[in-house]
Length: 265
Ligand SMILES: [Zn+2]
Image 1 (cartoon, helix red, strand yellow):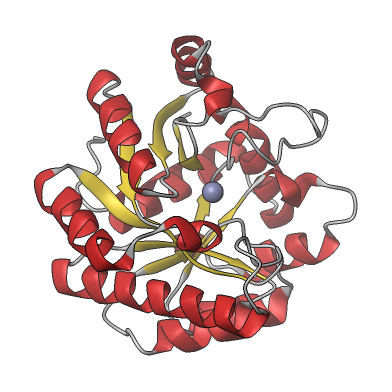
Image 2 (cartoon, rainbow, N blue to C red; image 1 turned 180 degrees about the horizontal axis):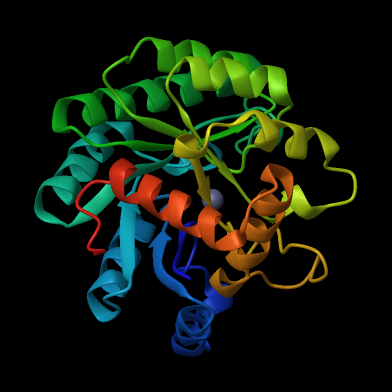
C-alpha cells in the first residue's frame, strides 16, 4: 500500500529533534511521499531545504491567513514569486481565510478580514499566472473562501482539513475543488465530516495529517506525524465501504494529478 500525506508541517519546531525517524517511520507504514506545507516565507526556505535532503518530501510556498500581519506586502509578493520561479515547489499554500482565531495584531476584525482577503487574492493571482495549484485553509470562513475561489476558475484548489458538512462539501465539489481529510474525521463528534466523505467521488479526495496537529484517534492530543495518515485512509475506507488499499490507490492518483511535478512514480 502506498499513501501520500498531502499536508504536514515538517519544518515545525516539534520535528527538529527527530525528523529523520519521523520520515522513516512514515515510509515503513507505506507513506511513500509527504508534502510539507509552508505558512510564511521563512517556512518556504526551510521546507525547500527539507525537500532537498529527503527525496520523499516535497514543499509548498505560501502565506497562511493567520500570519498575514507579519507579511510585508511591499516586498513579499515578489519574494514569494521568486521562490516559486527558482525553487521546486509543488503548490502554493497554505493560503486562505481564518476568521476563527481573533486578529493576531489586535486590529479591528473588519480590517483583519480585509487584509486576509487581499493576501489570499494576490496569491491566487500568482497561482493563476504561474500555473500552480493552491492548498486552501479555511476556518469559520467557508462562504467568503468559496466566493473568492469562484473569481479564479483557472486555479485548481484543495480545501485542506475539510471539516464542514455534506452541503458545503457539495458546493465545493461543484466548484471543482478537491477535498482533503485529516485525523479529525476519526473523532467521535465528527459525524458531519464522515457524511461529507460519504458524498465525495473517489477522484476528488486526498488524505493528510496536518502534523504536528490533529492526531487521529487513539492518539488524540499527542504530536501527530505522517505515519498516521494510514488512520485517515482507514476512516475513509470505512465511510466508503471499500478496502483501505483502494483508498490509498485513489488518493495517491489524485495527489499526483493535483500537485505540480510531484516526484512520485
Ligand atoms: Zn496546515
